[in-house]
Image 1: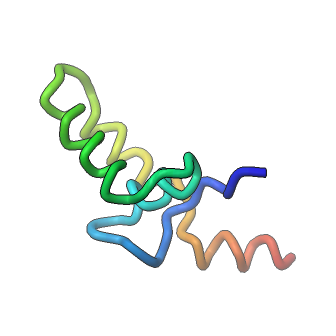
Image 2: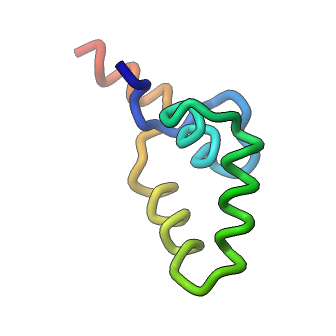
Length: 69
């Protein structure tokens, strides 16, 4: 089973979005950051998607405390 999609507390640079995506999809955070940086060179709403994930994805500590209920 794959890891839950949450913003991590470890390997976080700005918000932990790329590190959380990397853990979910089984890659390294550096690889996910490179993919994001290269995708920003293409036209599209990549930066807005990153901001939306920052707002919508729960933080790892909040997700574990909610699972305890």
